[in-house]
Picture (spheres, rainbow, N blue to C red):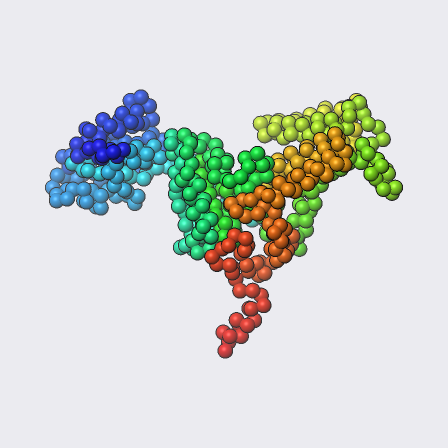
Length: 503
C-alpha cells in the first residue's frame, strides 16, 4: 500500500477511511465531515470540508448513486461510476491519498468506494466571496466597474471575458508546505517572452516556506530579485481586469494568488507606476493633460518641501528676484523638525482614516484640519507655509496611481528634508544622486527600472510622456522582448494594405 512517500488508495474502504480520518482530523475538527454511504451493494465514504461544498450538487449526486443496483455496475464498475453515473463536470481519479487530502483541504469532495483503487475527486467547491466591485484605489470616471476578487477562478473568468484568445495560458502552481496556496501565472503564449515566463515559474516553484497568509505581498518578496531594502516597487499591482488585460497584450506576465484581489504585473518600470486607466478612458489630449498633471504633482510632492526648507535655511541660495520666498517667522520649533512632525502627522491621519468607521470620517477630518492644524499654527508651533507645502505634498502622494510608489516617494522626501536640514545644499544633492543611482541600478526581472529613459528609447519614451491615440499604439514594448512585436499595422502601412486589397 505504501510506496515511498506515496500512500496508494486501498481497495478496502475502511483502510482509506481510517487513514483519511486520521490525517484530516475527523472528529477533532467540527468542519471536517466524513459521510458514509452505501450504493449498489458497495460501502463508500465522502470526505469534505463543511462550508466549501455546493449542497445542491452533492444532493443530486447522492440521489443518483442511491438508485443504482448491483447489476448496474457490472462489468467494470469503476468506469461506469466515473463515466456514466457520477453526473458532474469536474471529476478526477486519484490513486495517492496525500493528493486526496490536498484536494479535500482545497475545498473539493473525495469519494472512496469499496473495490476501487482510485478515489474519485469531485470539484464541487464554492468559496465564500464577494461580487466583483470597482477597486477603491483605481476608480475611473468612465469605464468598467468590475474588479478582481479573492477567488482565482472568478479572476481568470474576468480576464478571459476580455481576451478570448486560445493562446491565453493560466498555469496553476502551489507554494507553502502548510498553506498550499494556489498561485496562477497568466500570459499569452505567442506574445510573452518564454524565458521570462519560465523564470517566473521557476522562482515560484523554488519557494520554500510554511505558508503565505499575506498572499501576493509574500510572493512578491520571495520571487523578486534584488535588494529587499529598496523601497521602490518592482512589480505593479492592479485590481482592474482591463488594466491587467492591457498588460497581457503588451507581453507582461501576471501573477495572481488565491485569497487576494491584487494581481502582480511584471516586469514593471518606474513609469508603469505613474499610469492610470483614466488616461485611456478620455480623449488623447485630455489623457496627455491628466498624465502631465500627475507627473508634476508627483515631482512637487517629493521636491517642494525639501527645496523650500533649503532656501528658508540658506536664503543666499535664492536669486534677487525670489528673495520673498521663505518664512517671515520661524516659529518655536526648528523648521526641519516642523516638516518631520507634519510628515508624521499626515501619515498618522492617513492610517487613522483607514481604521476609522465611515460615520466618523467627517469628525476625523475636522480634528485634523481645525484642532491640530489651525491651533498648532495659531499657537506658533508651526509655520503656516510648512503646513501649506506639506498639504500640497500629501495631495501629490494621493494623486500617485501606485500606492507603493507613493510610499517610496514619501521616504525619499523625508531623506531630502533631513539632508536639507542637516547638511544644506550638499545634503540635498547627495540624496538626489543616491536616489537616482538606486533607480539606475534597479531592475525588475531583468528590465531596467528607468527604461525607456535609461537606457534611452526615444519612441517608447514618447509613448510614456504622451498618451498616444489607439491607432498609433501598434508596437509592443521592445524591452520585454515579446515574440510578436506588432500589435496592429502601422498607420503608414494602412493605405498600402487597402490599395493591395482593392487590386
